[in-house]
Image (cartoon, rainbow, N blue to C red; front, side, top):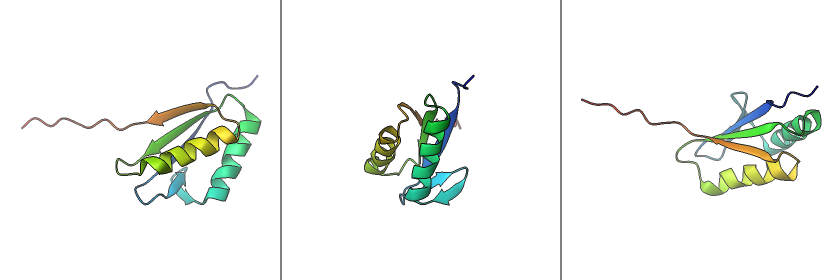
Length: 86
């Protein structure tokens, strides 16, 4: 039975660098990881996390790659700002 809760998390920073499992990777490595995840479980959810200053176009580029390679379940991870009351 396939795990329907499988997820693949990738992050982007403001310089446009892509991270997977905390390590900087190139686009070829990202593509290979997405293909592998899609082949293992087509229901894998791609979770994309981006630095607040990341260019919108860089996020869209990753989303397009993920969809092109067969993962259609996408999520954007956001970081909530903490409210500090003085």
